[in-house]
Structures are given as C-alpha cells and as structure tokens.
Image (tube, rainbow, N blue to C red; front, side, top):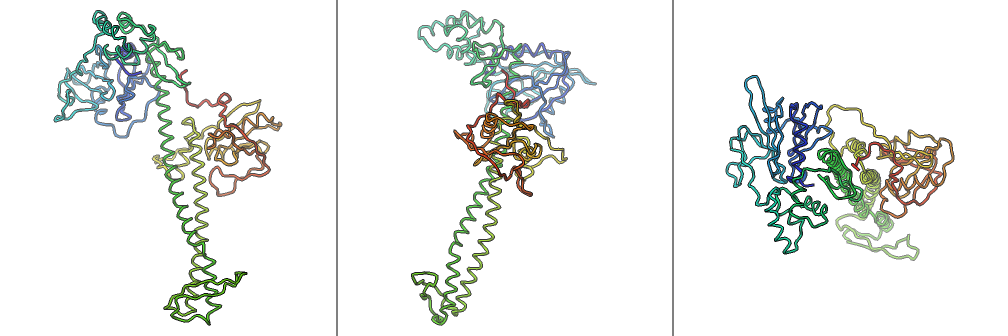
Length: 564
C-alpha cells in the first residue's frame, strides 16, 4: 500500500505506544536511503527501519540488523552525534501529511536539549530532516543554495512543511458532501475522485473505501472510514503471493494481523527477502553469462582456425606431387599440373609455385605449411575440448542458478563462483564455508534428496549408499537426485516422482517431457580432476518425466517464508 496519510496515521500511533520512553542505542545507515535505529524500550529492544527510497518508503520494524558500511555516511554520523542515548519523548504524525515527527530529549554532560527528526514518506521526495527549534541541523537529502526549489533543505535553514495540497480535509463532512454532489451529477469514478480530492488518501485506499460501501460511498462513509480510527490490519494475496498490506480490506484472500506495524513488517520482510534473492540471482547470472559468452566466442575462434586447416592433407599431397614430378618442374614456373595418383580416375591437380624458389624448395614450403597446419589442428583441438568442458561446466552452474527458488539455493553457488574467480572474495579472513542442506522430499515412505548446485551434487554423491537410486536428466544440466532405498525395492511411482523433481530442477524445466536416467549409485563414478558436478555412469535406465517441483512433499525449513 502507498504510504498515504491514512496509513501513516495508524503506523505513527502504534510507534508512539511502542517507542515513547525508549532510548536510542545504535544508529546505522546500511544504504543511501535506509536508516536503522536500535531502541531500548520497556518492552525490550526494538529495531526501527526508516526507508526513504522512492518505491518503498516506510517506517517499519525489522527482525534483523542490516550490515552497515565500514565508514558511516555524514548524516548517520550527525544522528549519532546528537541522538545517541537520546530519549524518545513523542511520536506524532503531522496532521494530513505523510510526515512523522520524532521528538527527542538529548542529555549530555554539558547540556540538555530537545531535537526533532522529521521522517517524510513522500515517494521520490522522501527525506529525513533533523531539527533544533525549527532550524535544520542536517538532512538525508539536501538542496543546494543556488538550486531552484520550493523548499530549502540545508543546515541552518528554517524547516518548513511541504506546500499544502488543495484537497478536502476528510473531517470536513460538509465540504465532502458539496464535492460529492458534483460527482453524482457526472456519475464519475468514485475511487479516482476520492484519491484526487480527499486529503491523505491514495488510490488503493480509495478502492478499499469503495469496496467497503459497495462502490457507492457517500461523504459520510468516507468520513467514517478515514476518521473512524478502526483498523483491521492484513496482508492481501494475489496468485498465492503477498500482494500488499492494508489498514483494512474487503479482500477475502488475506491474513489478518494484530497491528498495522506487524502487517507492514511481515509484508516488507517478504518483499525485501524476494528483492535480495532476485538481486543475488541476477548478480550470479551476470557473472556466469559473461563467462559463457567469452567461452563461446573463444570456441568460434577455434572453429575458424580449424576451418583454415581443413585442407591440410591437400597441402601435403601437393608437396608430394612436386617431389614425385621434380624432373618436370623448373625454377621460374608459377604453376604446373600433375596427375593425382590418389585419384582412381587419374585426374590432374594444378599446383601453384613460387617462381623465386627451386623445385625442391617449393616442395619443402608445402611440407612446412602442412606440418604447421597439423600442429595447429592438434593444439587447437585440445584447447577447444578444454574450452567446451569449461563451457559445459558454467552452463551447468547457470542452470542451477535459474532453477534456484530461495537464497539458500544460491549460497554455495556463490562460493563456487568465487573459487572459479568469477566473483571477488571480499572476506580477507577465510571462514569455514557454510554447508547448505540438500532439498529433501518424502514420498511413499522413501526420502528423496536433490542437490542445489554442483558442489552439493558432489557432496550428495559421496554421502549416499551404493544401493541407493541415483537420477539425472539425460540431455539437460540438472540437480543430482537420490532415492534413499535403505535396502528396500523402490516402487515405480516413487521413481517417477524423483524423476519429475530432477526434471524440474534442470534447464529442461520448460519442456513437457524430459528424459531422466536412473541407476544404482554404485554405477556412478566421478573421474579425478573433473569439474564439480561431473560424473559418468553405466547400467542405467531412462524414463520420460514431466517437470514437477512437488512443493507439497518438500521438507525445507529454510525456504522463502510468505505471510499467509
């Protein structure tokens, strides 16, 4: 939900009840638009997140503290200087505005003073401004002295509120009724009318007002909805995914929360986790795709060089024919024709000569060219083979990244790319690599395990019994899957389920049917000094499986949590 004044009113009230009397313990600025306050209150430690980005501005409780940069930005240092150990004396919304004011009592050895932090949650104009007696001490986003702007935001200037919007105060019922008369005459869009004309209401809130009153809200209805102070906080869902948080909603597909803060916190926890996952996935895919393109370009170069050497045997033949017909070749000739004794039809071949060379030297020239071409073919073929192995390996990493669904799926893949040198390892002190659990499924009394990446595929292969059943897609890169048999025969239905899981976590996920090979683990070997995830196997059977992640069978406690 957009941070309109209607929503912020409830957030500010709940923050007032929670934070007044609390003391600021720690202030960090994890990114350009984010501030985090650790606050000691009577009810325990609270982490308050203030986000001032254009699309996700909010005041929000967070369950974890984001890592802070090594060097704190200037505004963060200013807040630490003035607000460290300060007591919160008031939290209040500026009436009708998307602004929340935090008042502080700041006590030091030398003085006691009152400061205010204005948190302006206004989309792309969002900002945080620290003031003393109405004078700005500093702002997260400042304006230059010579900049043309309606509001001056720099140290020493007087703090002024944004220019008041020409809208109707929802408490003024008579003004609302007068405006609604004009709307009734035109039979217009009531949601758009409410959002455009009523102070502090976003279009999404206006839609909820219309839904509450069967699309025909009156002026009194709007007044009661906005000013009534009754909230039913919830997170709404769309296609199984959290779609928004609301102060109250007529949507049936929702989960209700005790407070607006809790609903907002749950929603943004999911949003930020999803955003973090998408950014991590994009980062890894960018690194892999860049390397794949370089390798493909290198292979194309090798193919071009091999194409140049395609006539090596013909070059050798020409040298042999010059030697065989050396009596007929004279210095100064630019070419001659000789019978090709390898041709059963007795055809002739025309051979170009260098006029300046003797016949024997012309033959040697062809022999040397042939020898160079043969050396090139041997060298380039080996380089091409090695490059193709690397390309296949990085394509397998790309397949695992594309199949990833949670941050857990990407953890070891990131470590794998650091080992390969595709990503920079910023950790100077090497910590033990974090080992992620396998994907785990239960089907028909059998446990099915699937790797999340190449490193896990190798570890999975080492950790299971020779009598367990191993699966892998036939023509696609995929996760390795294993059915733990415990010495029991595996029903065909369980094998098919495991094959569907294997097909789902492959780059053949979009196909209708995927061939999947399966055999006993004892027939699977990993050759020494091969890339992670590479194996050879024998004594296998193949079945066709429809890709299916079988989420209902998944026993993964670390998967992305959705409020529902």
